[in-house]
Image 1: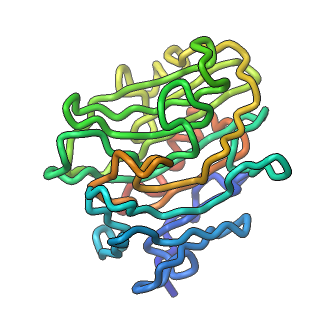
Image 2: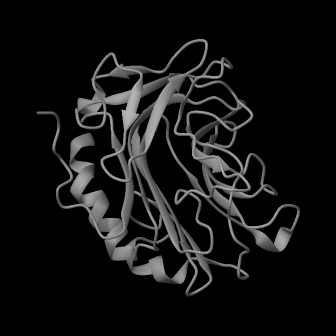
Length: 253
């Protein structure tokens, strides 16, 4: 039947949901990952493919080698196609459970991305900088325009599972980052006090695929594990972000 944890997650406007521990999303020994909703499908790619492990009931493991290893969900924007996995002019939330291997290379490793291979490129990105021991969550609304960039950063440990969340709130012109459902600098009570205020972004449409495990130029490979990921086409509230962590986090304790 597969793993069924997460029945209490926020469902409203959830458009993408993949989980290595659920057979409806992934079957061991397969190279295809299916989203529970939206009809999205990703494939293992690279000269060495990601592998499935039974860590915390199921995860996809990335080796950290520069060999184009990734899970590619495509959805690349073109002149005639725009994906709902791009924020566009909507509010937006991306959420992922991951772990960094303590033997990760002494570089950055990309966890989850669509475009934004550098801070001045359109799209959004979550990545780990090993020299700094820092998780970065960022987005960019217009190339080469510093007023269109937002970023949050958090110190994290290796060999520990985290939930990272990116929220773009168009109604309030705010950009939020969360770690394990909370703001690391002050806990739940300070969440509403610590967004990065943004100028109204242009439409965030990336001519790049949705990827796990590397950047769109196949650089900064991840050495670690990805367990599950979600995308919403609206901004989750602080209480909803925490609700998702409470619904899913017990799997990793």
